[in-house]
Length: 312
Image (cartoon, rainbow, N blue to C red; front, top):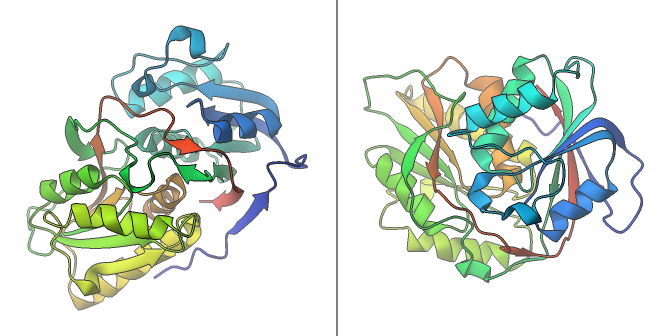
């Protein structure tokens, strides 16, 4: 069991000038106030917008100079971006910051994996909290039509034919249909659910529980399979994952472990940190339910801005 809470996080005031600076800021444009605020206020020698096709922006709404691509998956997308934009950066020396707020989770995961493989060991990650989700517990961030549930490229584990002690750990977010899709895909595994508590706002935890309840027919979890990690702290989330896995392996070796980060981007970052630190080369993989379209205007305003200092 590993404790990741030694890693440092700090808060930036969205209404004040920021003193921190980087060589490069990479952000995914989603049109929200919180993403545009960070991009405008961050002090960086170079700033890159990337635009996911899944948002369906008309060309006129895409910022000038943005990276766009018709790539078929997260790996192709990030590799194309890197080939066009990262050749002049020494990843072993550059000060890089990722604003993950607007990223598709699989693309965010593969980008971090790519940067770490290229020699990046220390970098900063920004996540900005919204003031509110537009439709509260009824907010959907993706299309209801899930085309496939598959492993995120770069986070595929070894395959164990023995499935007698398979476990699926779900970081539960607002979208009950995504929780159901992943749970149904690994219906024979033991299901463990991580709730975001403390939540981003006081009422969001109850909203989260309501959405998870909507997926309860698919989840074969008991009270002992429920855990909590702050919705805005990836380091605690990584520590909770490490604790869950370590304690279960003491009782009985896991056959296959599946991780499904469906909650906030900050909590999903915790899944990435845990995976890159403890899971590579094992029968552990990250799963994600892929949709063809993702919603715009799902959040309102900007509340707090967090900077996480990552060391892999």
